[in-house]
Image (tube, rainbow, N blue to C red; front, side, top):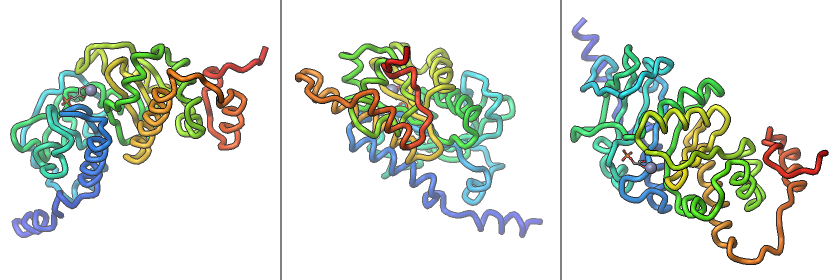
Length: 285
Ligand code: 13P
Ligand code: ZN
């Protein structure tokens, strides 16, 4: 028996080489370098496959437990790698064990069991309610959803101050800014008004929007994205940010050319995406 335990521990691979840790490092580094996530701005959570985590960690060893402040019954037993609260994205790559944590939602649905990380006594992001509630909402719509990213991309945020915070109008303007937009996020962008961050209330409101959208604007704060992979989720936010950049670079200039709504229909149909037709101004009377 003893020999088996030693063998099991001996066989664990180095967590710092795990693809999911490296993906978190690369993503946060990119977000920092793009200027989206100043200081400790932004947070990332990634639903992991238990079998994959088992290759690196002893899942019976809980370092400590932390209350989450809400009940996530649908996520009991699920394991996430999550950025730490107050941690700077610029530092994740050089010290992943202090800036990231791997948590499992305990049997009561209200406790996070720390399996690795937050080594300086830290804890998960203050936006855990919005992350976990969004994971639960997206998993109901798409069982393959794995990633939730929150960020403060510069132009998206700038656009929040000069454009109406209406999800139909906001989506429509973004779609007009780049040809690919309606193909990349045909489901559009949900918009929430300014709300107090870090609360269960903003978490619940975000998750409600996530039933319908993979992208949710937090008015005058930032954006949430959800997707199956890190690339998909990052790419969604990146595409919104690009469109918002074009908008901010041109909003004060006379508009000479325009991607028409009929062009967007042609795009959506050519790429066979299910798009929010009600977000377009089509003459269909
Ligand atoms: P955390 O440092 O708690 O992740 O918060 C950053 C943030 O962006 C709050 O909305
Ligand atoms: Zn934020």
